[in-house]
Image (tube, rainbow, N blue to C red; front, side, top):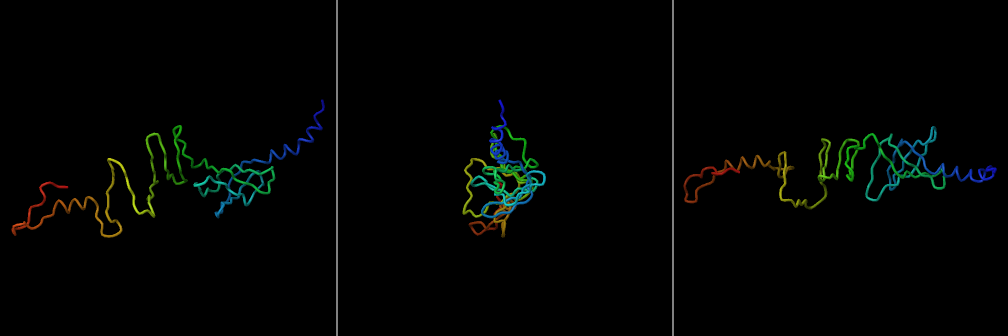
Length: 186
């Protein structure tokens, strides 16, 4: 049986399917209401204005050299959509099954591990902003470093407060001299 007539009919469909998805390398990013990227798809095929669709509540600014999967509706290469962008150069590879990690290229991370939540600052400050209160409901709060009260003004560290308390005296109630330092230090 001769399949040539069918092959001729199916050829445009096959070309359209072949053109629907492509692997790409990210070359540039511009941010607006919808992030738009530039990608290199095939040797010599650069696409500008490719919209990067991200899950609601999650966004990133990927680095050039990251890899993308780009989709083209109906195989029409005139309007691409980056449906996912990944960067194997910076992806943590030590997660256990079921664990989740939000990360960047500097090694800053928020990990949901089997042992609990771990936040890694990569040697950079961690700041909580624009909240009227931070509440921790736990029977024990451990801090390995020093704690400073009123850090932006005249605050003291806990060690400095202990020093003041342990050395303080005050007048006797009966008009006598000053009391001794506390008999039990803080």
